[in-house]
Structures are given as structure tokens and as C-alpha cells.
Image (cartoon, rainbow, N blue to C red; front, side, top):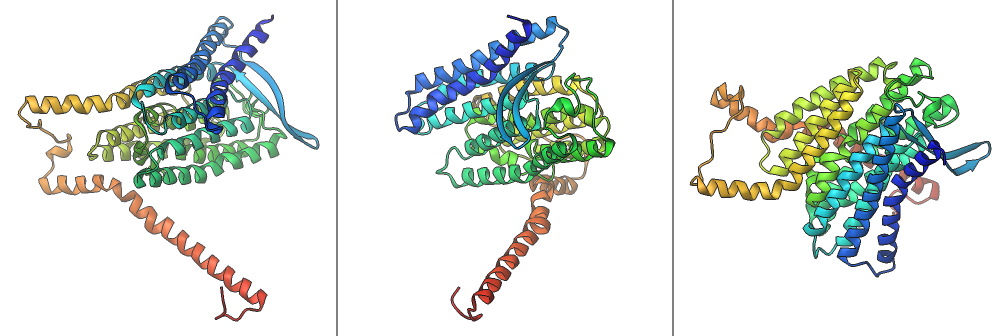
Amino acid sequence: MTGHDLISGLVIAQLAAPAASLAVIGLPALLGRPLDERTTTRLVGAGFAAGFLAAVSTLAILASRDFRPEIVQGATWFAVGHHEATIHLVADALSVPYVCFSSGLIWLVNAFAGKYLHREPGFTRFFILLALFGTGMNLMVLADSIDVLFAGWECVGISSALLIGFFHERGNAVRAALRAFTTYRICDVGILVASVVIHRAVGSGDFDRVFGTNWPHGTCLVPATTATVICLLLVFAALGKTAQVPFSGWLPRAMEGPTPSSAIFYGALSIHAGAYVLLRCEALLDHAPLASVALIVIGGGSALHAAFVGKAQTDLKSMLAYASMTQASLILVEIGLGWRVIPLMHVIGHAIVRSLQILRSPSALHDRNELDAALGGHPGPGGLWPVSLLPTSWQQAIYRVALDRGYEEMMIGRFVVGPAIRLLDAAATAERRWIRWLSGVPSGGER
């Protein structure tokens, strides 16, 4: 067996192991005979443990070969005329470390969730969605074409929205899930159109025909104008996943889901999916200064917004949500500045720390209450320097703005959502009148 064959087998195992666990627990549930809790937890854990070990083994082999990328040729997805979409995967210095920490984190969260969700009515549903998310994440990270990446991207998005609405008997959870799903749908247009542009530019969705595979030293193989268009579309797609202004409203509401999914989705992996896509396309960003400037401006503004608003939140998970948004925004700024390895290390470090914080948040609240009781229930001195140096009336005004999240949602509702709804209502009314006129029905007739 050659080294390429060994790496190919390990890369396929990183994707096949969680997919197999999804099938094994999903099919019995589909037939109305779900597996018991212990078996479900062990199967999902075994799938991600196998994927983690395969990723670590691949990383060790790549390190011994100076991280020379390896392309894994897969099966043909579909063929139309002279065009065919083939599933290509890549093992390089970006994808394999990312799979290592993502599979490892999901493996750990799986063990935590097995006890946290004990006897929950939707226990099996949670683990099916967790396995779907992990499979989609690995597919997105290992993809060597925009088509395969988009498939993984969509798996991540749909599982994220469904887990936000996990407690579907709660109205707030369902509304939060719909808001997140709507935001994802709007921003996913960017990556979909970018896929079309790439196909039009090079006749294929393969990354090696756009910017090569030698990350982080790729070469832009398309004209600068095309690279700028592709990067701007990918930036737009990343804004939704990373909860940047003006698409930040869904993230604090996403904490309506179970604590384990909040940790792995919005503290660790899903919120960094946009950053990963931009890192993968770093060679194009080097030839698209407009997209880099957009990343710096939007990321910097979103970081300030999240840091400012997060100080006024009254519950721990919302504070952690805005803390995640702050770090994700800074990562986008780092990518816009042209850095490559630093953003990757920032992603991994932030994911680990934030997951721990969110998983421990219920215990942290319990410990805080015990400490307050021991101190006689008197909170310590508050205030944020240098805001605490301002007059009291100014502090109250600043706090009011922060508590209302900078009036971001009010302005979006007034200037974007409201006009859009009125425009759609007017279009629906015009359509009904047009249909009545074509049908010969009088204007006062039956609708």
C-alpha cells in the first residue's frame, strides 16, 4: 500500500465513520424503533472517535511529509452532458487539523450530552442531528470543490436550525430557529452564486483549478476581477454563519437550544464555518483587496458591537453568545489582514475555551449563587471602565442603547423587513388582480 492509498483510506474514514453512525441510529428511528439511550450515545461516540483517530493519523503522516497536500478522488456525484461533478476530498495543513479538533470536540460533547439529555423525549433526535452536523462539518472541511463544500455547508445549516428548535413546544425556540434558518437562507445565496461564478470561470468547481491546493501558499488562477466577485460573495455567505452585523440577531436567540448543541455549534464549530471557507480561499483574497477591506471593516464593527452589547446582557448564555461573536469578528479581521496560520490557531483556541464555558454555564450559575449566598447576597462593584467614569445620566443612556442591542433590529425591521413585507403584499395583490382579469372575474367577485 502506497502512502497516497493510506492517506486516502484515512480521509474517507474521517467522513464515513460519523456518516455510518448517523445511518445506524437514524434508520431504526425512521422505522419507529429507536435504539436505547446508551447504545445511541456509544454509537455516535464511536463514529466520531474513529474519525478523530483517523484525522490524527493523517496529521502525523502529513507532518512527516512536510504537509504536502493529497487529493482523494471519489465517486462521480452526477453527470450532465459533458459536465460531471466528482466528489474530491483534500488532506492538507488546513483541513486535517480542523477535522482533528472538530471530531474531538463533538466526541466530548457527545459524552456530555448523553447524561445531560437523559430521559428527554427528543434524545434520539438530538443525536441524529448531532451526527448529521458532524458529517456535514467534516464534508465541508475536507471538500476540494465548491460543490462538495456547499453540500456540507447545508448539512451544517439545517442541523443547526433544527437543534435551535429542539424544544419545539416552546414558542421562543421555534421563532429563534426560524430566524436562524431565514438568516442562513439569505446568506447562502452568496456561496451558491459563488459556485456558479467559479463554474463559469474555470468550467469546474474544483479548487485546484481556482487557487491550487498548497495551503497556505496557493496561487490565484483566475483574473483579479473574478477573484474579487467570488470573494465578495463568499464574504456575504460568511456573514450569516459568523453572525456579523447586520445578521447578528439570530445568535443570542440560538441559545434556546440544548446546552450541548449551543457549545458545539455557537461556541466552537458552526460559528467558525464562514472563517474556514475564507481561509480555504485565501489565495483569492490576496488578489481581492476590496473583499479584504470589507472583512476588516465589517469584522471590526461587529466586534465592537458585540463587545458593547454583551456587557448589558442579563443571562449567562447570551453573554457567551456575544463573546463568541466578538472573537469570530476578530478572526475575520485577521483573515482580512492577510494572516493565515494565526486565524486558524485562533479558531481552534477559541472553540475549545468557549465550548468549555458554555458546557459549564449551568454549574457556573450554581457556583455564583452559592458564592452570593455566602457573601450575604451583596453583589460586587460593577461598571465598565471607562464608561463608569462618565456621568450617571450618560451611563444610563449607554446602557439603554446596549440593552436594545444598538437598535440594530429596530432599524432592520423598519428599513428592511417592513418595506420588503409591504412590497411582497403589493406584489401578491397585483397578482390576484391580474389572475382575476385574465379569468374574466369581476373585481368584486370571488377570490
